Figure 1 (cartoon, rainbow, N blue to C red):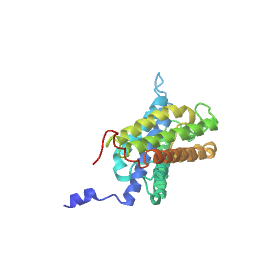
Figure 2: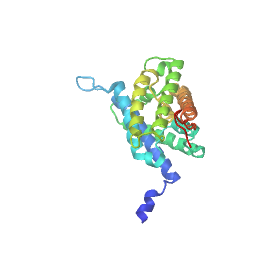
Figure 3: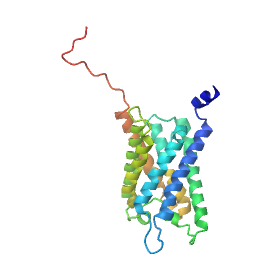
Figure 4: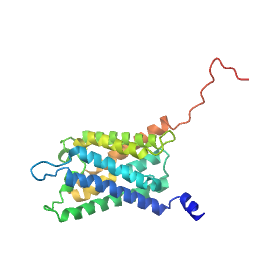
Length: 259
């Protein structure tokens, strides 16, 4: 009887916050670790780096495993933009937003701090690798794109991401497949955005890299916070208006006469 009771007991606030912290840690550790150690790796006689594709896959896979592991506990946000977007869409309580945002930012910072520890005993210790992993425009953009391009891609990509989240986690979504759809969506939009902005869509991930990325990364951090949140809010407002609004019952067919 106690086993049945524990199985249906909802997670506590502390459990939910720890789940968000751990999920965000895995996400940031996976994608930033790949960007730092794998995307520019050269070994032996050849070039063994994973490139943009490897970083995009690391992002999608990190979210996928975190969502399956911790989604049942916290809902699997791992991203302040997602949390705010879900609140705007009416899928998450506003009273819980601040705690989730704090847990996500702390989880991201812990991840980059752990990566800094790994880097510290490597062959070359250069903290500025975090500058290269930070999101931004002009000198921080891998392709040299300007502010407008970076702001636009971060806004649109995050909106697409939240549209998918709202769709697959709604009443019409296929149960059990939501993390897979969400992870693959992140991989797809990252392949578009990495050359432009370094593909964040996540203020917690951006904060976690910028604090070690130097003055340029910190100075451009606002873009990686404002644009994803704006994209999430736009998507949530549209989804709530178009897809979640009550619809009138369909009229009876013309050839049918009710008694």
